[in-house]
Length: 375
Image 1: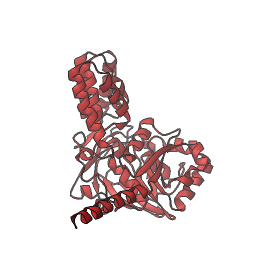
Image 2: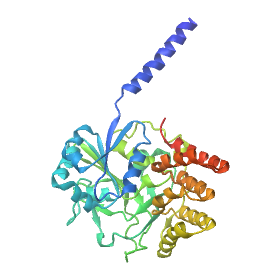
Image 3: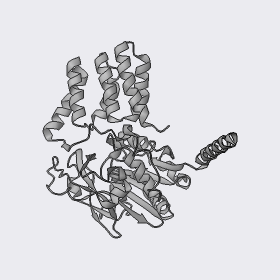
Image 4: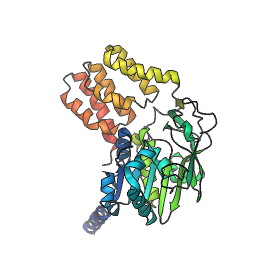
């Protein structure tokens, strides 16, 4: 009898494993074209790959013309410039994307993608999100860690934060949206008033939609005006948005139980870049060119504390700085910021590092990055 029970348990485990293997991965294409910021593309891909059941690839405007949408379940338009992305797509591909969603496909727009999906007069857009962008003349209003609050619908979509009153996420000149024809469901509301740059008016961004979603034909569209994919501890929210547009928002996820993905020590307060902060940020770049070891370490710490947007392109080379202390600090910065794009570079540093103490520190950062990835 005991052997029979063991056999039945083993058979059940094998059957469950086979069922998981037979379940098809959902296919997601991240648009990689003119107008998309390179780091935004990298980060959108990395964020989607946190969900091991999403098969993620980049797609170009040529791929769309060749029929790639027929092999996808959802598309993601990353941050950058919405009008330039529209130009890169061209009218025929815009039509193909709208038909893709109408037939039942999913679409997620991040910042510029939210602009592109909007229904905004006198703007190159697809008109599929039920939202209209206003105050576009002050588009360069500023950036930094912005505060937002989930609505009741948002708490159901992101139950990990159901008890949270205020959350924080990287915002970079995202659209100010109001309802257009068809409207949308608001999943989160912007609390921060961003008007640090460009003579932008006060009280324009606050109390506006932060996350929103709607139906378009048989498909679904989700938009975020900010950048969870660029926010440590929030990257996984992009994968959840993809799940929502696929009609799978209730699917169990590992995000609620994995502390590595919830780590948010860098983004636990509002921190909007002022004009003086921007000057300081620029001076940090010069420090990396000409500064001493101590000055570079101080610059890295300041950039980390202020969630610098530009530093994500600077820190890669610092992994191979002449100073072992700077190399270790750069690896820690990348791990703290969840920059999975630079995982191969951190691995290269670990393998090539001659200083034993530095190699040990880099190893800790490398392990933290690897823990983010699905098994």
